[in-house]
Length: 146
Image (tube, rainbow, N blue to C red; front, top):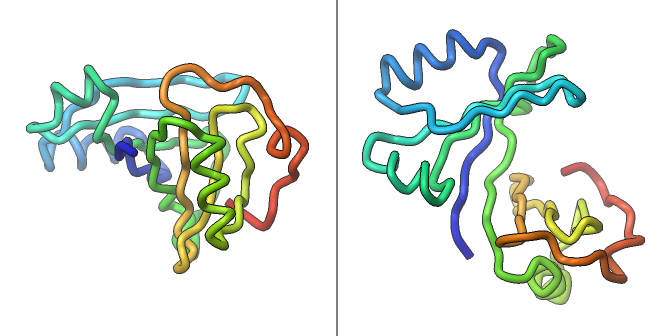
C-alpha cells in the first residue's frame, strides 16, 4: 500500500492557494478541471515532496473546489485519505473478511471507500489500470455514506 493524498474541500481556490502556496510554501503540481462534475482539483506538494509529487503523484494535498456554493459543516470540508493498493479486489475482500464495511464497493475495478472506526473516509485506488469488473463487487450497492 502507498499513501497518495489527503483531500480537503475549499470555498475559494485563490484564497486557498495563497495560504498553502504563498504562505506555507507548497507547490501546485497538477490541476484537473471537470466541467461535467462542476469541480476543480488542485494537487499540492510540500517543498521536499515536489519531485515525487510530480513523478509518482504522491504524497499530495488535494484541494477540491466545487463550483456550486456549499457551506461545509461538521467536518465536511475534510474529504478522505487515499491509498493505492496492488489489487483492489483482494484489499476489499481482506477488509470485509475482517469486519470492515465496504461503503462504496470497487464496481469499476478502480476505486472503493471504507471508513475508519472514527468515521474517517478512506479511498482505496487500484495501482495502474482498473481491473475488469468482477462479482460480487460489480453488482454490490453502496452502504451508508462514504
